[in-house]
Length: 378
Image 1 (cartoon, rainbow, N blue to C red):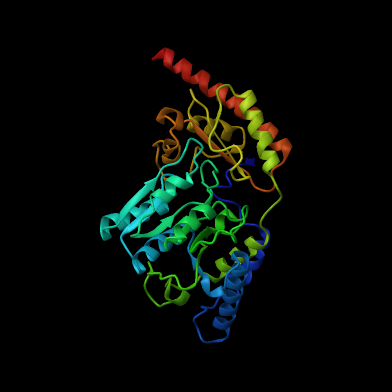
Image 2 (cartoon, rainbow, N blue to C red):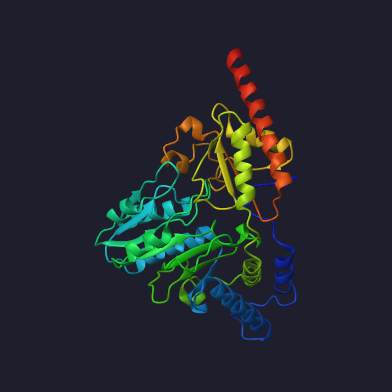
């Protein structure tokens, strides 16, 4: 099997499992308990938090552990907007993850916020001038994804954040896909979301960096863990695993392999269209549309050949609607439904990707031929 769906999830790395194992077995205590087992768990949690702080380039007190990227996004968007709204206006973009878009929609429905959604160009990139023009004196928060989960577009977050912060507006970025590939320390934002299972840690653990002094209304209420910002018994093993996974990132520079793969697919698959920018994209991402076919059919055909990919995002469970990201980029709905995403990890090789490109060409031809035959019969 050749696995090219790392943007959906990664396998848990052996080193991560080994780091977690003690806290799933002998050192299983609750870190809030005042006995030896609890204190051992509390120390492990403290060490994991310190490791994440070094990785973020922040203080340990600015790290909040969550159950994953979705919760981190919800906590950032809802928590910052509701804690100290100087107005009821939020700015985001049309290609955000559903965790951000639905959080903004919640603020609109239940708390009277106005949400401005800034569009993108045909490569999925936000225009800095257009974004800046959307900012207002009553804007409380902006949320801009660092790197898109479908087309890999890397947004100019540092520039956008500078424009917002000049007006006193707090800034959040969803860096779930960027973490491990891009530097997060120079963004100068107020909140950053990451998720462990994109990095070789298990599902069910994530983190939110929150700049010190940023008001944050908790989404989960209870015993006041995580300095009152996220109640619930902490996932100690998960936190240890996330810290271990981050210590192993990033992998090697796979952008040249990705570029060669893109070039080969475009050369040998008739009509193939690259989605997203050629340069400002994640080194792990290669995404295409194959007009005249079906992305789902190509996915299934590649699966029969032992190649695991995704027909766009894996996060819109059960949806057969065209990708909102591709539609926002101006791609026609019927073309958007032919999308296939290839997301690499650091173990990808030139030989593998060459073989995959050949299989993509064969799969595309097979699907197109079947579609033509079906159309004639109809």
